Image (tube, rainbow, N blue to C red):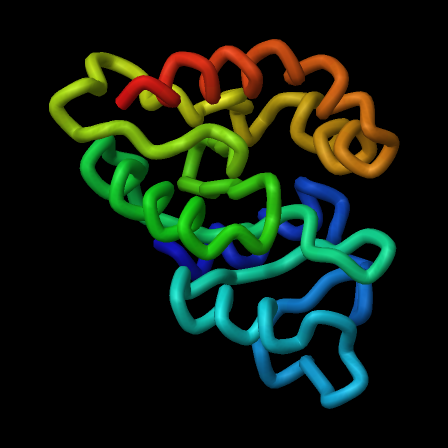
Length: 161
């Protein structure tokens, strides 16, 4: 099932024609001259990523394919992602949805999470037009402007824990 997702998600998100140094699909693409190669290599190893999108020589989005998005796996992965601190956005890609998580939102104890992790910024259906627009929005900065309040609220809400 993940293989079918692998064939499509890059095109759906608009990164299929990108190459290093703007998009990496494995740590084997990293060279000694790759900016922040140690951070990217660690991200691939720690989070088992399927792609890293960079802008201006800095990691911006981590992409990871999953068979199913569950609360337990999201909370564990977000904790690892936040502790790594390499990129501001984590994108989980399942068969039918794409979930966008903020690296600016501190992890919360599992017992504090009800129906939605505070780090979840956006859910996009894989068949929607919004999927293609997501990358453009991140590159232009619009994504951060539109979701700044959410990120700040998440930080404020989790700072007391």
